[in-house]
Length: 402
Image (cartoon, rainbow, N blue to C red; front, side, top):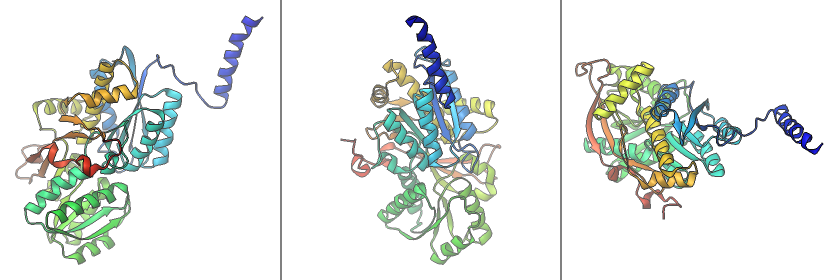
C-alpha cells in the first residue's frame, strides 16, 4: 500500500503546482537555457531587438546548438523599457526555467533591474545595450560583464576629438533618465578637463514628442557645439528638429550615442559629417565583414555594434563554460576574466570590475558623394586604445576591484 501512494503523491504535487499556475523548475540536465531581454517594440528596437535575437542565435548555431553536451535554448522577452518587467521576467525564468545566463539589451534601468536578479540567483549577466558607466563603477557586481561600450568611453572618444578641433563651448540636449544623466556627467568632465565649458545641459524626457521648447534653451546658450546626449528615436527626432529649427549649421552637431541603423534611416544628407564613437563597425576587419555578410543574409539588415556584441558576448560565455566544464557562475566568471578575448567584435580583457576593455573607434558619417554603395556611409578616423578610453581602477571606484 505504501508503494502505491508514492506515484499518487508525486502526481498530486505536480497537479497542485500546475493548478496555481507554477511550472516545476526545469531539470538542470534538460537544456541549457539563456534569457535575452531587450527593447523589441519601441525606439531602441532597431538597434537591438529582433536583430539581437538573430545574433545570439548565430552564436548558438556556431556552437552546434549544444553546450556541455546539452541543447541550448534561447528565451526572449520585450522589457518595454520598464525595469519592473525586466526584473519580473528574469526572476521568473531563473525560478521556473532554470535559466543559466541573462543577457541585457538596451536601457540602463532594465539592465540594473536584471542585475539584481543575477546577484541574488548567482547567474552571469552580460550587459550589451545599457551604457551607464556606473554599471562597472559604484554598482559593479562579480556576476556582471559590461561588454559593449559605456558613457565614459563615448565621452572621451568624441569629446576629446571635438575639443581638438576647437569646439570649446557646449550645450547638451540630455535624455532625462539614468543613461542620459551619466553621459552628461562624463561629457562635462571631459570638456572641462580639456579646457572647454558646458554652458548648459537641457534635459528632455524619454520619447519626447516635441523638442522645440528645449531647442529654444539650447539656442540661447550661443554655444559652438550641440551635443546630443540621448539615443535611439530621441536622437533622431532631436537632430531633425534642430535642423528644422535652424540650429544646424549655426551650431555644430555632435552625436554622442548613435547606431549605424539610425544613420541609414536618417540618410547621409541629414547626418553627413557627424562624428561619433563606437565599439565596432562592420568594415573593421575581414572577420567582421564575413560575420556581417552572414548576419545580413539572415536578417536582410546591416548589424549594429550592439548586435555584434550580442553575438560576441554569448560566444565568450559559451567558450568559458566549456573551459570551466560547469555552469557554476563563479567558475565561469573566473574563466571569462582569466583569458583575453579576440574575435570579430574586438580584442581585450575583462577587468575585475566586469568592464570588457577593448579598443574603441572614432567614426564619421560620409557625404553622399563619398559613399560608394548603400552601406558605405562611415569613415574610420581613429582607433582609440583601451588604455585611453575606459575608467581606471581609481576612477571606477568599484568596491570589488581590489
